Length: 271
Length: 281
Image (cartoon, rainbow over all chains, first blue to last red; front, side, top):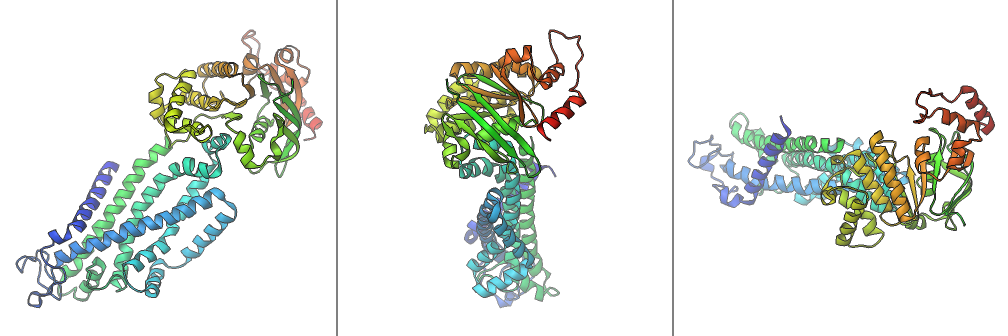
């Protein structure tokens, strides 16, 4: 797929989701928590107004999906950005100052990566207690290593290049070189990673919701809907399929955006 | 007249082998001194030692680098940084990699002016415009907005020359500034460096392997082999009457426009063996 198309499709879909999340109360045809046991597990289009059908408690699936984007996007943006800031900072310092800073950060990353990430996140949220903040903290604590590793390698390579040497011959201090010379060259990689990380954050949140460790049950989440749908998959496939599709498309959009950005930013560096 | 740069018995080495052996040379105010030698002669190492940007594998093991009365080798890094760019500046070898690919020319050119000369953004950009004019860049307003990859090699080297002279340094070190350029551009850039040097009355330390370049712009020259000084003196005298057999061999290995029919001779193996014995390599 051409890179511009990827960026437009990926970015466009994410923008679409952001609008849905913001205007959820206006868009949702029903209250996402309103139960209607008379209309439970109605197939899509059977009950009037329930376009995507209802779940086992008769709650409107479309409305729950719409409200679910709020949690998914909040986690995607906040958790990925924080993980990015933490990991990039540590990666820059490790790659540039080498020595014990590098040794410290690198060992920490090695130890971190030895844990299975999903188990670690479940453990973390279990310890911190369920809730949106805990989910975000868990993702940041686990996924900063992705940024740290890549940024460290990239910084190391950039700092060796002659423009960094030329800057130090100009009398610029180490901090100034890192901030003004190296960082702008590392930034494209960070942007790409950030986009991919947002997709990962959406998945992790869904996993935590699926095992019931995310936000409380009075807030609809895609992961939570998938968990409910799984139990009645043979009676009502739509309860599982729609949130799964939303999750799939969202992650796909973030990944396409990331890939498009990478192709777009890469030749600029290589030229 | 006391020298601006006085290098005394400078020695440096890597973990496995010596790079500089007891190098002494002095450069007087306003003159152009050439450091000549083939690859591995240590000429760039001398330049980098003066600027305090030696690669991590190379350690100075003895000697002094006296710049305007101060020994640069014992100076603390912050004190050395205060001098760099302001009193000693570098024209780097490769204009392609020595400019930051991710930043616009204007931002890079004004770094020194803003950080070191304390100008505000407006003043620095005005000064940058006049600097680009000085190095004969056409449409300097547009060049300031460009990224390095949008400029030709010659233009990039001109930008780097403008940057080196931007803070009126007393000494400029040019590390093979024309090696990466093609021959027609080389000549223009060389003339530009010479003009800038004369105009600013800068002392110039010119690192090169090209005797033709030396003959064109350098007042005095130092010939190095294997990190050791073989010959030092006024350029015209050395080129007319070289004392060291290595200098003679180097001259025979260089093309001459006045004797085009004469074939080039490589430096003889026996001479290299003899030199190696002499310096103890």
